[in-house]
Image 1 (cartoon, protein in one colour):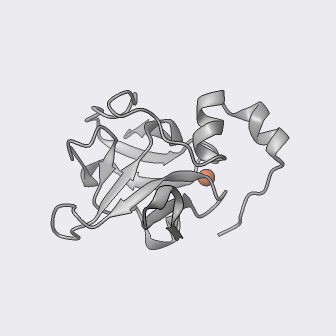
Image 2 (cartoon, rainbow, N blue to C red):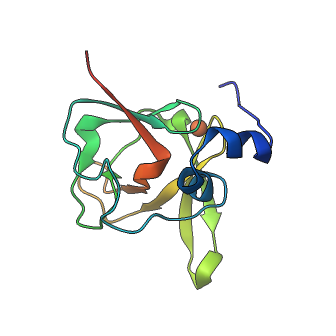
Length: 131
Ligand code: FE
């Protein structure tokens, strides 16, 4: 995959301040505030920063966490997983593989068939309805 690299100034100009705080500074939106949390339309979720396709709607589920949750990415190459030891926790960070933008975290309490929960910030995602 071709990576996208931009200066922080370029990202700042392109993204909203909330998106910048999450995607570039690894922030987290407040639970139950995301626009796409309750979205149940059929389509594809992509990176809000670079458009990289990330998740299909049929892998989205209601985890009760307050953040859009998916049990599988659209492909293994779509995301990058990183060890995150911030805030005194050991977590797996999920980044967009194309632009390095912070998307959220991965937990192992998701539903079958994967048992994984990709816990994403709505502000890090775009959505394109099918058709
Ligand atoms: Fe991206």
